[in-house]
Length: 114
Image (tube, rainbow, N blue to C red; front, side):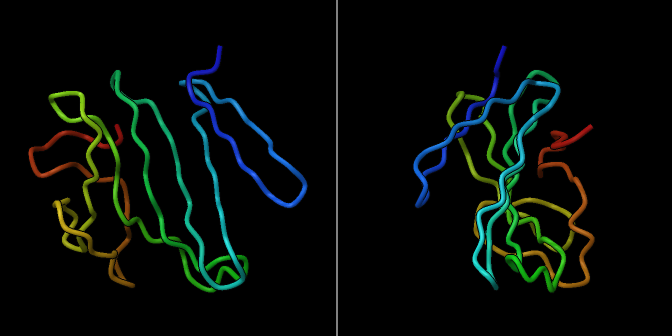
């Protein structure tokens, strides 16, 4: 059964895709030089959406993790932006070019990935 669901509209009409807790979901929307990638995963009983900035179809540079969306303690969606120091905080900053942008934890130590 699908846990994740995506829909997209383009010049040839709409399409949908389903994903499970095990498969997750990966979506890359892009132009020639800029794009955004969403990776949806289910870890430790919670859904996470990672937002990456990409260099589009030309793929000149690696994807850069911009932030993560998850539910907070009140079950309200929150966006946590990534910092080059390897931590997350609430304002919006990009990964540095030499940052590995690997999976991290939030400021309170909650794992984003296991």
